[in-house]
Image (cartoon, helix red, strand yellow):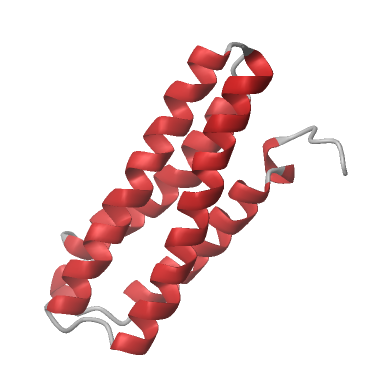
Length: 123
């Protein structure tokens, strides 16, 4: 087991980062008139996931860490909802939707684990 010394060492951040990259690639195919609405909102949600994990990692107390990890979890669920909308209005093919939702769910699972682990480690 490796020692976690920086937020980039966290598996949830690594998987979240892959999700951000995938999100940017997927939303490049969205209609240009969505650039400042759904596309922007989806990208902001994705970036918020890893940003809040990074910020939480830098906090000292569980309460502070948990606050940012919970915000990250909220962004994950927000992103899942936005991808559902994108699929349902025809901006994403079912195969691409399925691929990215699998990554979203993986990040969600890891984030929930981080919250739980932080609670037991810092309590």
